[in-house]
Image 1 (cartoon, rainbow, N blue to C red):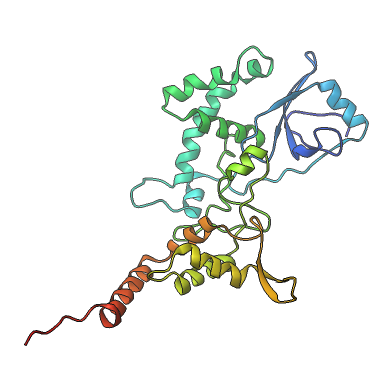
Image 2 (tube, rainbow, N blue to C red):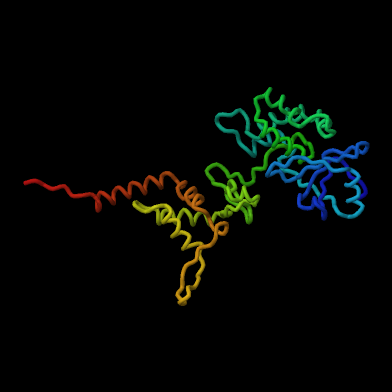
Length: 298
């Protein structure tokens, strides 16, 4: 690899950029010794950053980076009709949502792309470039940043600005996680400490266990927390030993098991018909076995 060009995807093997993953070369200017890079992974919005072009070439000569093959989104370049076949429109819409989304943001990206060179050279701020367009079309500025970063990370291809939806779930289906993928917001402790998300990644099997435990143990006069502890003792515990050799149940630590919030969210969020049937069954039980008998006067 002898030269670096705009649009290349590269990966740093060593130095302080090595933790950034694959990055795309957004802009280079040899006369100003400037290169602008952006992380390809935009599941969390990551803004572009500057590096001296001469330093980038030094990394090339030292073998500290390699070029990567670009993974192309299968939806890129598809027509509106093809998108409509893959994502059918709703009853209240004239076209499919991805086609509408792309049409709206495609026009906005065309408007902002012309002035990006001034941003890369420090003549303008990024916000001054996008804020007038966002205000004119009543768009969220934070959302504008997310779409712009995705547009740049995908090689400034106007047809390649659709968000990743591989883990968003389908209609009537809850989101599930792959191994090591954490959904949900960070806990306050993780935010303050700068740690990664410590939510337990729930698989489909784990969600079914939670639903089963909710139906089994969350009953009238039983607190959710009590049912949650029974669930942990059944599915997320390990055998320990006390000083006298007696066996005891040791619960796994947070991050290695679902939290109470996850238990409540997936347990209480089951089919409403099932919840209604349980309530009716509870009322019937009460009427048969729990209600006080009225004294019959003679």
